[in-house]
Length: 253
Image (cartoon, rainbow, N blue to C red; front, side, top):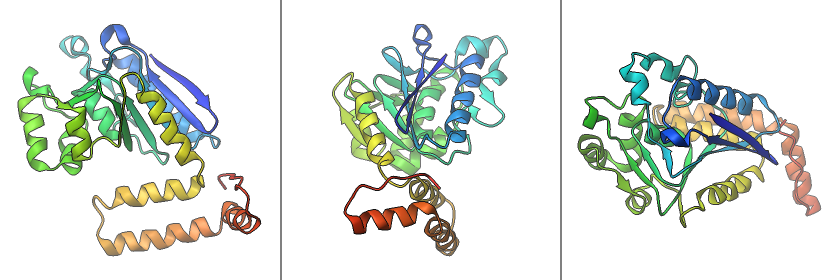
């Protein structure tokens, strides 16, 4: 259901249920949570990419499972919907979207930290077309990214945003040619993984906290993060490498 591959310090997670447009059932949700557990527990993995096999990134919840009374199986205790949307991660995940990301599939993309999408991609919340509510974060994450009015249009019409519009509004970081989203996401992940992982993870957490914490709280958290990073082995290595005019060799500690 979810393939797992490692390239250097980057893990590649691939949704692999193309015959069902990568719709989330209980098995996929459990597999996804297991993969994120693996990412978070492996000290040699610093960044992850989430991709999908087939022409659709993810069509959201498996409606057959919902109709048969198995809606509760589509979420896990730790990860939420798809085993992912509310997982308490520390490491960045980049979505590689090549095709439609709709309903819960769009919410999975929104739960990632960055999105690289091909010209074939589109992003929608189609739940209202089935008398459902987007319950996996889309209704509060989307307006933070693209603004309230456009988010209302997306959620209330069920019509997907084109990738061009999604890029203009800030939902998508980079647009690639069709079929090249994974390559683009990997390039971005490798650029991030070339930096000090502790600093990357702390910086990610502080940026996310800006959504809900006040400035004084974030400043205090920033000071604490600075102290943790400063006392790490990697800070000594980074400064020494700069003085010696060489590339640093990060250890993540």
